[in-house]
Image (cartoon, rainbow, N blue to C red; front, side, top):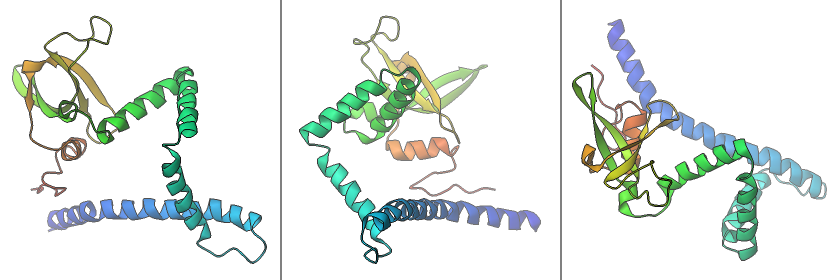
Length: 205
């Protein structure tokens, strides 16, 4: 009986936790915008002009204007200059470059091979295994010799329930194409296989 109740509680937690976290993050963003920008507006505007909610509105307008000006020549030049500066600071360069490349991998429009989900065949103590990964590179001609050869691909293997993973260089024959989107595959891997189809969780017996 207790085990049954625990299973029901766990299923309920799994069902509501993503929604609760999403609502909490949105609430935190709204509250932060209202607190920071609202406080600034209270100081800048004449007394009595400030209306609650203007901070959030200012945040939305600022975000829109930021996106609107990204294509402006001078703004692009300033962003490029800032990136050059970031890439000259050793520790910052590593963190910034890694985060930018990782986010860009899942957001940028690129050739289909770079968004390909694959399974990598492994042998662990005589037991065949497969790991789900993402092909990140199949051409190593612009990299120093020894990193990758013709007929090999770079595959990123994410870890479950944590930020991180491994990049392995393997023969193309060692990977098998998996017909699934990168977002669904990432959800499957990072949850340890709990997410199965379209965000639904597998049964726990």
